[in-house]
Length: 125
Image 1: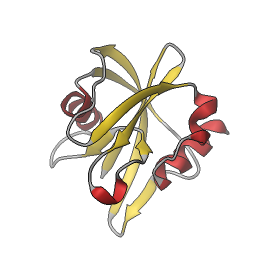
Image 2: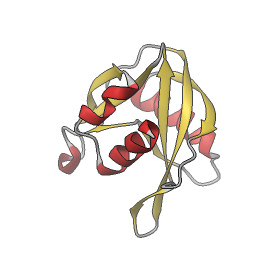
Image 3: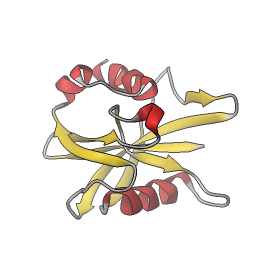
Image 4: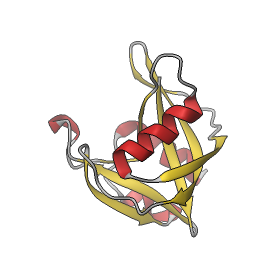
């Protein structure tokens, strides 16, 4: 299972541009990562955002959509959660080379990962 955070602050959503792996470099995403064994989805999202971007978040409601959870591979799924920035200023880590706060209506203009494009479309309604 993979979790993604739709991190919201001041009416904007946090997106990060992938720098790794090479096949995904240059594409934008809602940041997150893999859930470890015996880890809750909320705990995984908090850990991943702290490790990858140096921020602390409060995980809010799961993003409910008729499209989700989203399939990433044969046995891998992504679930997205709204989250509120609690502390820290996001900075790119080992998997990202840029961070942006963007208005929700502008998400469709980004070159998003396919699964994140589906989430953005569902957010737009």
